[in-house]
Length: 336
View 1 (cartoon, one colour):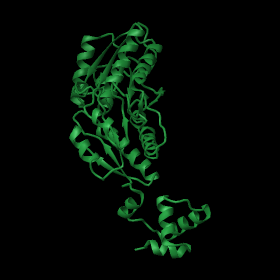
View 2 (view 1 turned 45 degrees about the vertical axis):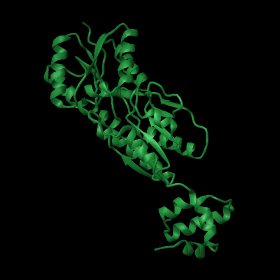
View 3 (view 1 turned 90 degrees about the vertical axis):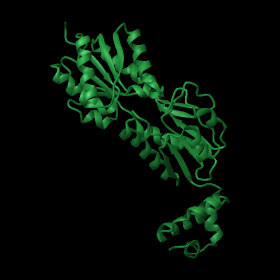
View 4 (view 1 turned 120 degrees about the horizontal axis):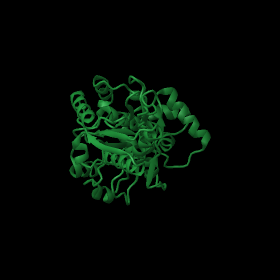
């Protein structure tokens, strides 16, 4: 195993100089720092995590809190997790993934330990019970999601309210007057999960502003539930010509259910979704959609957190504007 003394000998410096280059505790000339880093690379030296933590007074570990509650789309959430881990590695940090639904107790347990330097919190509710404690912690935090009251917090996310509005506006521009939103499972709304509530609010507001007819219909994330809801919806609303789906696992089943009921997509019913691009692109037909930018949101959340750890100012709120990509699932409403 390569030791710090081996690096020092190879670079022609003292072991303490190598430590200073690793920790950044002292100013080292650029030429010396470059020589030490080249030796580290050539020898394959990996600093011991405990020694690195002692040198920097940090653990170089971030906590990512994702309570895997019922109704959550796990594959989408894992895209966020991968983006956070990837970005953290660029900053020489590891990630401790916490998936238990422990609320304040879990948050306090992690914060009171020396395991992590800072926290990223997901699945944020409009009135999230973790927020009062987050505001008092001596560790920096970033929320992926927006609660109703975001004062004294650092939050980043897709602008889900605008995403709901953009989808309605797209259908309205195509001449659709009677539309519906097939949304997240009922328990997601019951918890007042921020992103789901904001999409629903954006949809409802745009429907009202455009003088359209449209309802938000929660749906369990199963093919059977999607089929039953589509059958009921078409029976009750025979004039329906536009659907927004915000429930990733049933994007495909909704389209198949429409076809099984004798409705062609997009000739009879246009379908737009809020979902990852790869899901929309590989649907049949490819779906017009607003992408969920997991890579960008996760990466920027880590960047915000690292800036806070370094004492740099950061914006309190970062809302990424939605981008709607038109594909084959939407078309002008048929003249009736």
